[in-house]
Image (cartoon, helix red, strand yellow):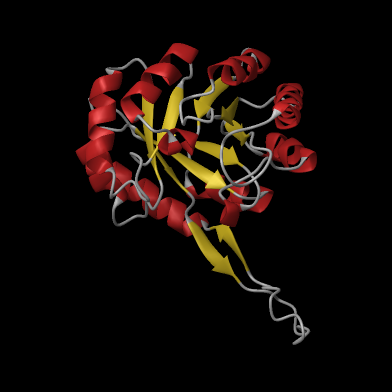
Amino acid sequence: MSTRLTLEIASNSLASALAAQAGGADRIELFDNLAEGGTTPSFASIAMARERLSIPLFVLVRPRPGDFHYDALEAELMLRDIAQCRALGCDGVVIGALDRQGDIDLPLCRALIQAAGPLQVTFHRAFDAARDLPAALEQVIALGCRRVLTSGGQASAVAGVDVLEGLVARAAGRISVMAGAGLNPANIAAVARHSGCVELHASAKSRRHSAMQFHNPALRGLDPHWDQTDAAIVAGLRRALDGDLS
């Protein structure tokens, strides 16, 4: 019997998370600031998502956009955010940190994982910014992370699919290699098939347009529209993955 592929949806708001669940997602990664690569969502967003979701909820723990090398103040922020996630009953956290040389910041990541306690831990796309992906994979495995989210070090999972295939082979079941970045209903099944990844990650977003009838023309730099997970796109991703198994 074929294994059902896991579809995780990157949800940039509570509304996105609920849409993802409605569309057939298996798991949510909740965060804020999609355009900047994601940052930790608010307390209320996490709490309400936990109250209203019946599928696993993972929370991105990232104190700011930019690189993945963090100072002591940022480390404390992440530790406190993880404690909050535990208190709110989340299923997992999504973490990652690099040192100045582009290797995994093992001391900081160990502290974050220890703070997570019983929660599952996903290592996020800081992995793709590492200088040596095979070495970084071994470090993430040694840390005890459940999975690593990666595009194979490329701008998209499609571009990095050959690297993803190699990472899956290298992992040899010791960690789940979850493909993400640029996945849509037209390409997700091919990436899963080629790479061997059994977990896939996508935002499934569409543009939402403001219902306001008035927009101040002087505020030209303020975009009144926003991106949000679309349940129909999530359903399309789910169908594509399920069709790939038939």
